[in-house]
Image 1 (tube, rainbow, N blue to C red):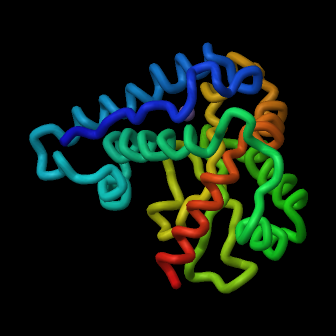
Image 2 (cartoon, rainbow, N blue to C red):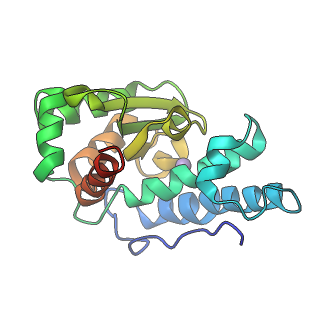
Length: 205
Ligand code: MN3
């Protein structure tokens, strides 16, 4: 069983005008696809062949194969973190938890955006659930660089934004803040984040 490149959850132009079909064609069709190829080539003929992607990410040592596996997982999660007609307001338990953790949903948005804009690396900006923390502290904003992912720290990702330049340069050039703002205002898939939050709570109840 090889690691597959998942289908995009929307049409290649589904996130336009905020993320263009041209960006998707390179980011999904070239960058993401090449990570999938690299991880499959790297595990072929080794004891790691056939292992689930998440197991690989959480067990491989730092290096090229970890980078390919983690970038595959991170991009799988990134495409799901956005939806056509996304943005707007979360509801239900997640909305309440964001207000408890950050003061308000608006304050969360501002903190999430500031973190993603301020990450000096080619990296990722995450909302995670920390099962080891109590109550209002269980939701956290985390930055990772390169291929790194909160999965390896025992944290449960709820939402991610890719802040590698390849995610936004064709559409926004160097204006990372404009891309981050579009993500927060127009693209966040709150249903996905809420489902992840519900699953995480159930898993750690
Ligand atoms: Mn990327």
